[in-house]
Image (cartoon, rainbow, N blue to C red; front, side, top):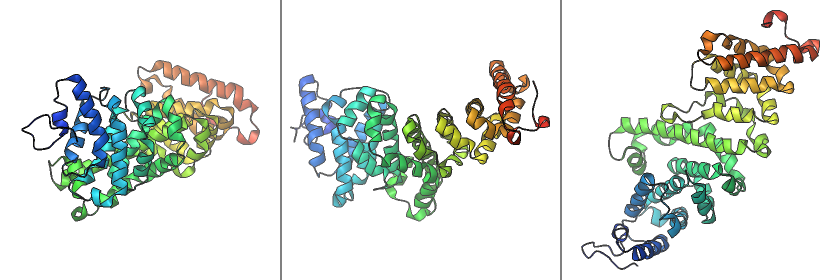
Length: 381
C-alpha cells in the first residue's frame, strides 16, 4: 500500500490524500500505485474513492491525468471483481462500485477518441458487455450501454465494439424492453426497491415519488442510449439486416426519448440512418405502419418533424421504394409545400416540390398500370 501522506488521515494510501500530493512526480507514482492495487484490496470504504473518481470524471472528462495512470484498467478490474466475487460485492457498499466504474469509463470516453482508444486497449469492453447482458441489474446496464455507445462512435474503436456480435442484439432488446424492465424490476413494487438503486437515483433527496420519477427518466435514457448504440451499427451496411427486423422497425417512430433526453434523435433518428441505405429503405417501405407514422410526424410540429421528412424524401428518391410508398407519402409532403406549413423553411418546401415533380414526371410514368396512383389522389404540378 502507498505510504500515508497525511498523518491525520486514518487510512494509509487514501486516494484523497494521494491526490493532494504537491510533488508532481510523487503524485503520479502514488496515483499509479493506487490504481494498480485497488482491485486486489478488500478493505471497507472502497466506494468512497470510486465515488470521488466519478465526481472528478464528471467535472473534468477531458483531463488526461488519470487516463495515463491506469484508471481504465482499474475500472475494468473492479467490474470483473463485482461480477465474479459475490461475497465482496455484497459486503459494505461495494454494490455501488461496478455502476460507478462503468460510468467513469463512459464519461472519460464521451468526448475524446484518444481516450476511447486507450480504454479499448485497457480491456474495458468485455466487462461492459457482461453488464449489458444484465449480469447485475438494469442500472448497470444503463451505464454500460452509455459507455459502449461512446466507444462505438469513433471510427478507430467501432470495430472493437462490433467484434462482440452480441452487443447489437443486446442493445436491440434493451431498446425494445427498457421501459418494461425498469417498471417490473423497480417501479412496480415500491417495498422491494433495492436501496442502492434508490440512492443512485435520488442521491438521498426525495422519497418514493422522486424515485419513481427519476426511474422513468433513467428508463428513457436506457432506451435512448440503446438506440444511439444501434445507430452506430446502422451506419455500417453490413449490420443492417440484423437491425431491419419488423419487431424493431415498427416501434421506432414511437420511441420518443422523453423530455430529459432532448438532444437524442430517438427512434426517428435511427430510422433516418436506416433510410440512408438501400437495404434499409426497402425494409422501411415494406412496413405500412412505419410509413403512416412517418407521414403523421412529418405533418406535425414535433422536434422530429424534419427527420421524418428526410426519411420520406429518401424513400421517394429511391426508384425501388418509391412505388411502394408514393400513395401515402405524396399527400403528406404535398401538405408541407404550403408556405404556411413550413414557415421560414421555404427552401425545404421548394426541395419537396422538386422531389415530387421528379417522381410524378419521370418515375410514375414508367410504372405499370397496377401501381400507378389514381390521378385524383395526386397533386399535379
